[in-house]
Length: 371
Image 1 (cartoon, rainbow, N blue to C red):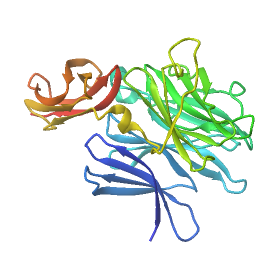
Image 2: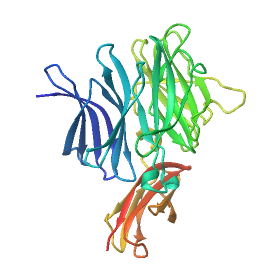
Image 3: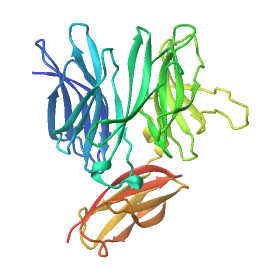
Image 4: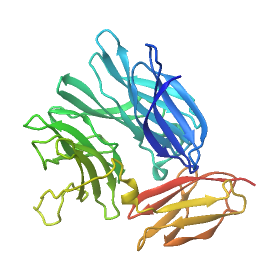
């Protein structure tokens, strides 16, 4: 009896998935944000909706410390002038709203991307978790003031940075951000001198929100070129992906860069080398090279089995942490196999683990110890 639109599908810590999107009625009226929890085989475990005012879900990430979710999007706040505000929801592990915030003023605001800023290594207390939020305020029909904000555990703003006039002719952030070594890497939608959609690849300081640099990705300036995804690579750089909307036939593109946005290593070389292929928007499977880890049974009593699959020729580091972020165990892993994890010395409670490849976290999760 409703129309559902799926926008995001993310893996969850239990091996399943979370599907997020919108649900609309056939009759006029406000729509709903729609969330569906799936098991590892795609079977529905539960679903829920939350009424919103003609808005949408733009990002959803699982919060590793409580298996809940942080959701970013937008909603209509002024139906007369059709003005929208950024919206963020914190959901518990069953999809119920813990808190909801709307950000903006008298101007029109674009949708918010939001993701956890707190990692296992800097976690101290559940009340001290933080989130990054990314959005934009309208300046004119073809230009927005981009902003980055740090939110506290209740969604209140700790600090906010905007990037106008440092960045001009921009409409908004175009990719879900990636965080490496407390630096935020993100794609930006910008109009070029031909009036065509173009792109910037930017790095933002995670402590202050200051813009470190923003580099143009202009390899077909007279075409409408979109930047849709980026993923870190084991060598410290990134793979970027998007598509050329104007080309016939339309083509996807893939670009390999280093951690400073350069496409080749010989300074001051900064050529742009692009391979156009037919590719999906999401490239996580290609860049992570199927490194994976699981622990069973979970909850565990005296021991558990650590099963792993590491990218060929790579060495990964498994680390286990207490709830306050103290590392209590680590081991190096190669290839495919399993080993026994002795949990008998650990007190009952919740522990967190992560798998690192080239200093980047490629998997993480939660281990519960019960006697």
